[in-house]
Length: 319
Image (tube, rainbow, N blue to C red; front, side, top):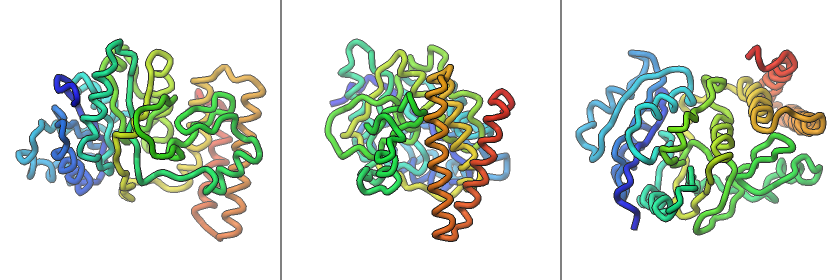
């Protein structure tokens, strides 16, 4: 049984997703360990979103307090706003399109309760519908064949190349295992991590790419981070509120370089070489895909990556 003295605040950024928000609230109401509060941080402007009206209609139906806030700027900024408003000793980041198994919060709270020395800073769940095997992914087979990465353990960070190893390659498992970074889709943090002043960096604005890895890697300097295979969930990947491929391509260069330089910097020539070698392969891979599939999305991705390279060359201080 979990330590029922734990209080849990759920922090969820949202944008133009009223149906997903209601689905999440219904899901949380079925938890064997209920959250103390759910903090919804809506990034939409006044009158732009139906989320507030949807929550207002059903707010009395839920066995926990709902705090509806508005804050624009992107998911990292929204989560920081939610952290500042949270009142519990555990703060969980749960995306609005994630659905937890009924004992998710109880399982993770129990792991924190077992940590008598308070060394664990955060525990991330296991998304059962995201798993894939390295040898089943053509892209990851080439990464390994060409030696583009130094490590291939899911949830670890390649400090020599600047690339987080996709945690979805982790086979289903029971118990916990150490990781270097945690997704913000389904992670629970000890409040003390944020009381030290740690927040998502203001660099990460609008659509989030790698802000979770940056936060985690900073926290991991002082805290243990774990993945719990028994805390299961699924991610529905709502198409609402997504951005175009060009911006994704841009952030896949700029954001990755920013995190690499912040976490492993000052970067040696060898590390810079490995980073750009990996980026060159990605450009080649997406180029061949664009030609083979005649996919306009791939072309937009490539244009974004070119934009990203130019921005890094000009210097991150200009971003």
